[in-house]
Length: 170
Image 1 (tube, rainbow, N blue to C red):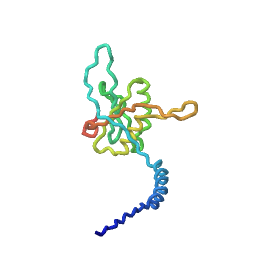
Image 2: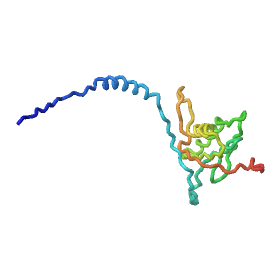
Image 3: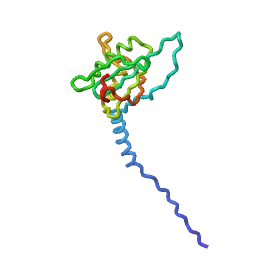
Image 4: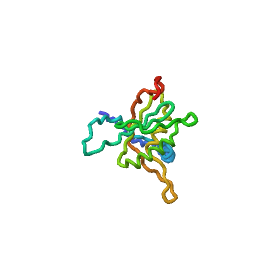
């Protein structure tokens, strides 16, 4: 009987080229990862808190900012309109909105939520600009500019029909 000799050969895996690629690729990806930043903004649907307040408590402020084509309207859902901010040079005046919201925050420091109500034709950039105006403002403290919160909890909804553009003058 003849025996067959088995030829078992052990081959080594040559991973040198793969390692060379990783040595170059990993630092490159780590250096470029700093430049890829994603900003996420937490948004909420408008709340429907219709519970009547007790006689001891005065009603809370339910702040709404309505974005119409020609103006901002700042409302309290419980009491009605607070202020109209008309466009300046055919653009929405986000600075005037922020200034008014700072005044509202000084009167109601415990309120942190605002509801943005937009028309269906509201541009995305205008909506983001309004969110930024409602979320924070810059204040000077000891010669340094710092961010201060206004109304960080933002809800989004659909604006009611504008009475001015529907044919009636409000």
